[in-house]
Image (cartoon, rainbow, N blue to C red):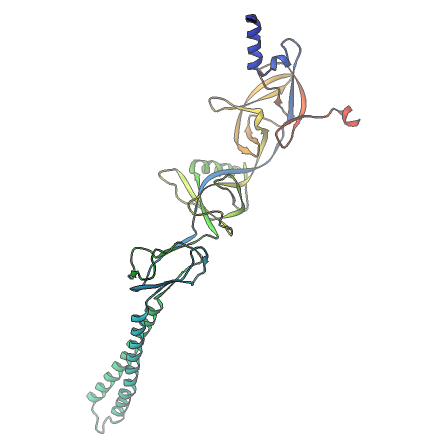
Length: 387
């Protein structure tokens, strides 16, 4: 059986563990080649990502206001309803009869008014010549009662007509209606607890987003000290449950003014157009808010390492040697870390040749660039550029 010497096996394992770095640059062969980019401070959007949940802007439970048997279901749950559209009809027979009775009572009451008004006028004119004050007062009281009876009859007629109109149940808002919970022939009662259907307004739709109060305080402090320039408008973008970005921008309609005692967060409400009904109530989404602009240094994510204790570190080319830096970041913008402390303008950040790099190692820095896909590309030399 073929056997390798133990020294060869150990060397092979080291090469495999280091990804071939020792083979690329064996020790003792001069400075180690690395790729670097020059750092600069720039204006960076201050973006926060928040969890959110979609809620209906308006939702109403449809209930009857009069008693009776349902005779028709007048809407299609597969189609949107408009405000005022009829949804259910209750048997109107009893309420139509009540209207006719009220009309008759009103006619009778109105017919009595001219008679008592005439009696009052005659009594008033005969004062001192056959009519006494007592008779005048009696005639006046009879006239006022007749007028009051007519007004009461008018009110009864309006109530009867209103109750008759309630036998056709309409939607108070535009939206999508749920499946009807009753069918023709079912008995319903005024103000019952069970809804006949529910209508939900879905366009536009609201999204509640939850911002940790501690982070909001930090952001406010940075705004007060001028580290962040506040945006003129606070708009939001959404990432849906399938990971797709929703192509409609939302605007804030209700900033939060209270901190939840259970989550320690502030609830902010944003409103989004929803013509295609892609966002439905109850969906969990992620909101992306651009708060403003801040001055920071962007470094590629591949050039920094998150240590076990959570510290973010990166390597700098300094006087021909590698120097490790601890960084303070403020999140991620696109594919870069936003660095607010630990780096300076003009320093050379090592982005290539990082494997097994140690503090104080001699290096030979070569300028490189990073394309939109995060691939390191050597910059052309001046001679190559002129050819």
